[in-house]
Structures are given as C-alpha cells and as structure tokens.
Image 1 (cartoon, rainbow, N blue to C red):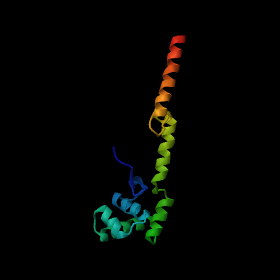
Image 2: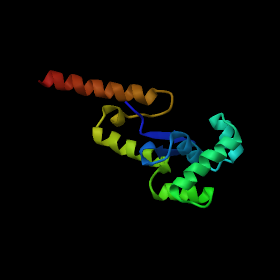
Image 3: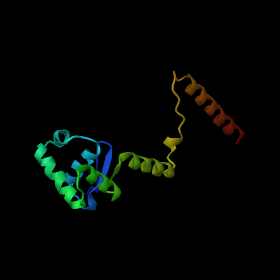
Image 4: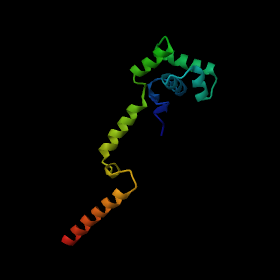
Length: 131
C-alpha cells in the first residue's frame, strides 16, 4: 500500500499531483513559514539542496517566487492545512456512530460518575424485575 499524502508542520500534501516527495515536503515546510535553513534542519539536508528542491517545485508549477509556489500549490489543491483533514476525519467518525463518542465524560473526583452508574444500575434492575 502506498501513501498518497505527506503531513508536515500542520500542512498536508498530495503526492499524486506532480511534485516529487522531497519537493512536496520542502513546499509544505515553506508553507509552514520556515526559512530555507530551518527546512534544511527539519529535512536533514543541506540548505542548497532545499533551494534546489524548492526551485524544481517552483518551475513545475510555473511560479516566480517561493511565496508564489505555496499559493499555486494551495490553489491546485496540492497542499492544504492539516486542519481540513482533521475536520474530515471528525465528520467521518461522526457518521460511523461509534459508542465511544456517545460516552459521558465528566471531570472531577469521580463522585458524579459513581452516582450516575448507580442510577443506571437501578434502572436496569427495575427493568429486569418488571420483565
């Protein structure tokens, strides 16, 4: 199974849209407002290599600047904020109807939880006796 996306620094990028994986990773980090030196540190490569990867991505998308590269990648939906992916996951999770979502979670010392469990147990006992 192959991955179709990369997530870095709060951004998600699609690999099937024409950019090489390292070009996409550098573009995602540039979108996260990192400098070339910071991108190089995160990727574990030399700053000149980062410049070459960003330059290649910039030429593929026809942009004049790195800022233009990020904007063009965003317009073409190559990159998107990871929050959109998170929101999509939350919507899908809600559609599944998992019981874990419906659980009542309350903070505190647990006293309310014990009372709530007792009330629920009494109701179950009453239903069993009535049946």
